[in-house]
Image 1 (cartoon, rainbow, N blue to C red):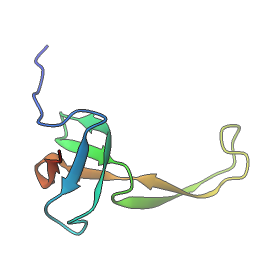
Image 2 (cartoon, rainbow, N blue to C red; image 1 turned 120 degrees about the vertical axis):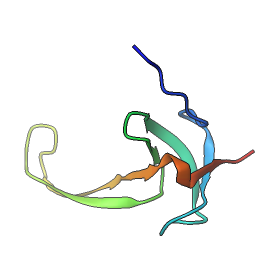
Image 3 (cartoon, rainbow, N blue to C red; image 1 turned 180 degrees about the horizontal axis):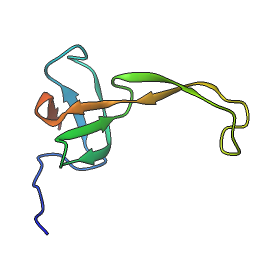
Image 4 (cartoon, rainbow, N blue to C red; image 1 turned 30 degrees about the vertical axis):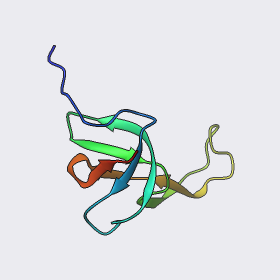
Length: 77
């Protein structure tokens, strides 16, 4: 099992330095090193349509944080 090293960890404060969301800041929620992506709270918020189910009894449209490429984020502080 090989471990892929990244420059950020979950919980780190980061700033987006490139792309459509340049300048936004937030905390890292998840890291997907095999895809070279991070999910940052409040950056790249995506809307997803959800059917009614036991987990989501109302259904409707949910807002969810989307992934950003790991090379486009910089650790702050």
